[in-house]
Amino acid sequence: EDLLMKRLISISTAITAALICSVALADSKTEKRVDTALEVFKTFTEIPESAIPASILKDAYGIAILPGVIKVGFTIGGRYGRGVLMVRQGDDTWSNPAFIAMGGGSVGFQIGAQSTDIVLVFRDSRSVNNIYNGKLVLGGDASAAAGPVGRQSSASTDERLAAEIYSYSRNRGLFA
Image 1: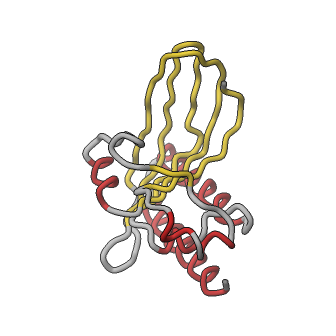
Image 2: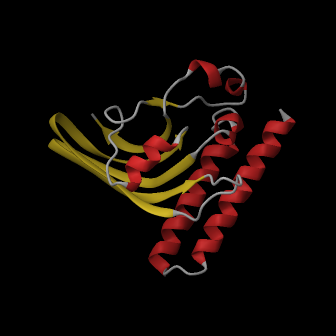
Image 3: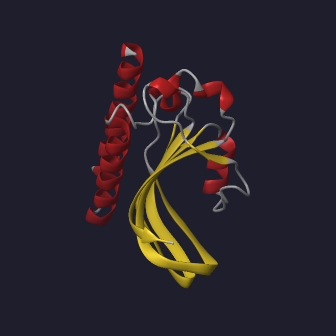
């Protein structure tokens, strides 16, 4: 458990360092996006009972953080958000953040407005490459699963879950 916590702190430090390095050259809008992404990532890793397990992060190929994805709908709906994507490099360091956007639409019985913070943990390069190519459909191009949480899940989930992407989210608002 101590080793996992040390690894989690190491990963958080690496992500923080990469984000800070990129901020040095960024404008205020970009800086705000990076700062918000960092805050969201911290909230997803700080509470032991509901945190993203360190073992999942340790083996991650990439991490996408999308704070405040807005979803609205009244029969016709849509969602849109912007965030950052970082990829683990060959020397086990993290790349500088690449800026990404997520969007989509839907039709059907729906009503409401919601803001969602999303963290996607990529297990391999295929899904990340689809993002770089401008197209990734979760569930269509890549299998996604709600990621395991908490300190007890780290030992039991690695072999049982075979999704390419683990998804973590926190919602505010109502949507039906």
